[in-house]
Length: 328
Image 1 (spheres, rainbow, N blue to C red):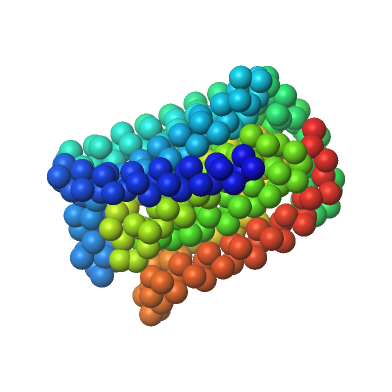
Image 2 (cartoon, rainbow, N blue to C red):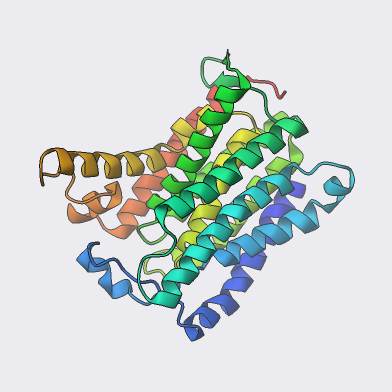
């Protein structure tokens, strides 16, 4: 019942918040600046309100606090820990968005500034999960139902790399109307199913609230988008995706469930590396991957359906790949 209530509360609050937040962002002239070296066909989106991720951050937060209050009073703070972890990344994104809006150009925090802030958050969260007993240094391998035992120092390095990488991969995926929203929705459902199956009620509540918030946000973010989530929302979602993976102690599950995030990021890395090595040649028409398909004639709606559909398939397969593992 708490899972359903978490979904409902997050959906209703997020949807209601959008009615007030979007006009407010327009009045504040918090419009998105489109990169000059980006797709020319996206220039029509210039000025669309950004920082819309605030609406689902608020909706999820209220669901976590209201529906999960009794659990917190009983000493279970799992859902709150993951929410605060994601919130830290959302705050980093908000600072970045604010700088972009204030300076009216698509440059906010520098890459080193973002990296150091994200790295600090990742390390702190890993230590907290270990202290609270959610995390072991045994690296579970989905489908094989085996564990690879690592020394803690190596696991910490692995966790920091995966968390920072995941957060930025989700951010890169947010380049087409509704795309990051649509891809992350089945991932949230995957975590809901795993948490409920294993008896992690509060983590299931949080994941269900994320799904509810994104369902409501999609009403505003689907093409043609009335609002963008901005780095505020995409970095928050990146924190959600990796935070739940580590809280459930299945970080390697990020590989199949996050296959779209990985493909988007790799396409960007490969494009840049190949461009430099060949002095100007390209593998993709444009990177990241969603722009490659756009230039091949795919509509934003088709990208949303195909990329989200692939994620649904990988999430279903991964659920069967981890379901035999018992919780720690």
